[in-house]
Amino acid sequence: MQLSSILHHLESLAPLAYAEDFDNVGLLTSHQNEITGIIVAHDALEEVIDEAIEKKCNLVVCFHPILFSGIKKITGKNYVEKAIIKAIKNDIAIYAIHTALDNHQKG
Image (cartoon, helix red, strand yellow):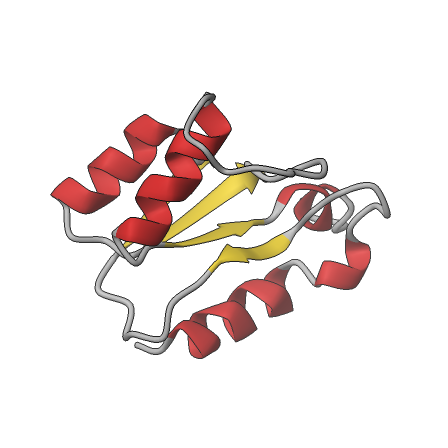
């Protein structure tokens, strides 16, 4: 299945317009390939990215956005940078749903 189809489905369940202004929901890292598998997690930590690699999944749908505030460097010096680097190197898309889901009437 194409990433765009999955995004359409996720955004029909929890529209990005429902998210709080401070939040960073939606597609955080991307790729152009067909989705081979999906990992659902609370946070897209490095261990979750490792599991996605191991299970040959190239989409992580998480509740909290790993990229929340401005990031000026990606050098691998903290857990956020390490997870992002690993996801990008391994062609793994990360999608966060946080307050878009929270603010849904059934969220």
